[in-house]
Length: 279
Image (cartoon, rainbow, N blue to C red; front, top):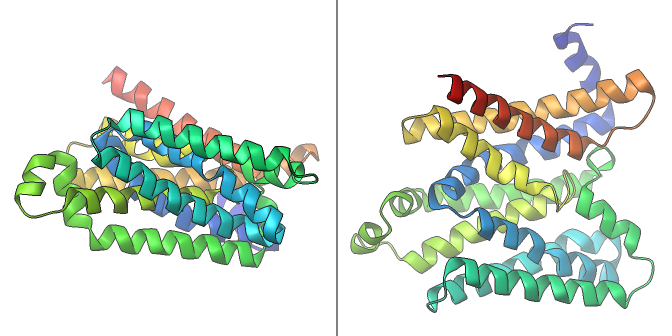
């Protein structure tokens, strides 16, 4: 079976269609957000927001069970975004503000989990993802979060680009730094929330960081960097799903889709880095 026949066969599987419906929008938004993360050096901020949604997952499950996981993560991401942006604007360094936000939110999540029984399995699912058992509702909510992030980035695109290259010049030109930072941090949080059902909360950093970092290794212009980042994100995501399904059928052992996608992202970066070094 060649690659084209494999794709056609995979598209006939309902669980694969749900996986593609989640991962492709997520990959596209991650590819765009990842460019700004790389240019502005916000990798640690992304890590902080990734861990900050954890109490939302726990609280959402306690209140409404599995249906409350994504709404809870969304609310926690919003709170963490506001707190992080406020602390950064109050004079704290970005790393200090991120560390405070990460520690506080993650500690709150641990307290919620420790006082609740029967939550471990569901939380583990959100931490590591369940790409091949995503429901239509989860796919719709994840797509909605990705859509909101894409719209916010397009609305503030000029401000984001200007700030990425010249923060002081952007403020002098009339762009509000706090609003620009708040929007970007919120978009990162939305990607984290969307990825909770796909690659999981702990593996989302691969989607957020790798495309932009890999694109920067080979692209010399900003527009080219954006295109390359998007292509890397979508290609690695789709390939990861196909590889996971193929291996699962070949060895008759379920292979986690989210982990395979994350490994594919890392593999793409290593290949890109090797090509850059040889050049």
